[in-house]
Length: 415
Image: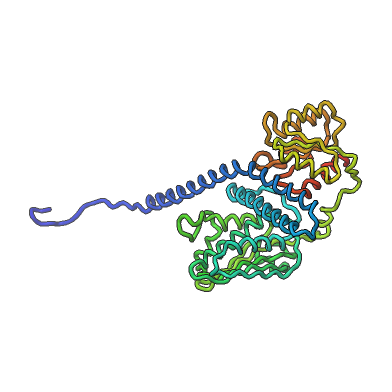
């Protein structure tokens, strides 16, 4: 100022763009941290209930299978009992899906699996959850298709994709198409998809007639925590989980979408070439006379000990069942040569199944031991093998799984 006359302004300007960007990045990381904490809490909750829930399912599955064996196929109750088994199987897979989702990691080994069965089961499940405004069309062009996979994870991926498709049509309705067909890639086509190699694949298609996506959204849909859903309607992990699962199965996911015209996802999974070998892996035991084999079966749940004994007896084994790991060890120490196989639960009071197996193998090295667990986080197959355990089985299991694990364990002893 010069007297009463204004002559200018003097000041300092500071560019705070970097600070604002840092604040935005901090906010974004805080949101991701909260999401991760939610998932951790979910994992803790899921792990807490998984063991007990799987024990309940094991009893339901076991006793239902026993009833089926005693019920003629012509009896009306036979079909109803099979429905109970299917429902229990869906509940078992639901627990697996929750554990996979909450921990974002592989839980089970991959085994020869019929993808047609997975798709049909998933379609039946999705059908019950869709509003009447959305039609569901199934188009499966093959009767059978073997892949090397964790069935529960592929099932989970299909459910996630269908749920996203349904969400895109929840306002106006539309058509959801689930298709499966076998395709072949030569080197030239495979070069367009770096994740794939030339060969035969199964292409799983999930197509909706919803609102579609623009190119900017498509570029980010597989990013963790990215979601177009409103707060409270999604974590943004569905497609990230799907992408991770498919990549771990040596496949890939592609997407095509136009705004206002809908979205199409293609999931490519390699076809298992050794189809005959996959079938042979389920063949009956060769050279094992079950009538001469005695099994020590241990589970602290009385119902599971009883059903385990009945299943193994039905399969032709002599069985001694115990509900106390301490008592089982005493019986074994008194008659170590009486038993050809030990099958034990992991989570038991006083002495875990792993500790029991260690003590048994100390008395009789090389004895086949099968360890069962209702929750994979307690112990996994790799840890079990380091303890000298022949087979590791997740609950709830059915009679076929019980038979196969016993057969493989006994065959390993002969090798």
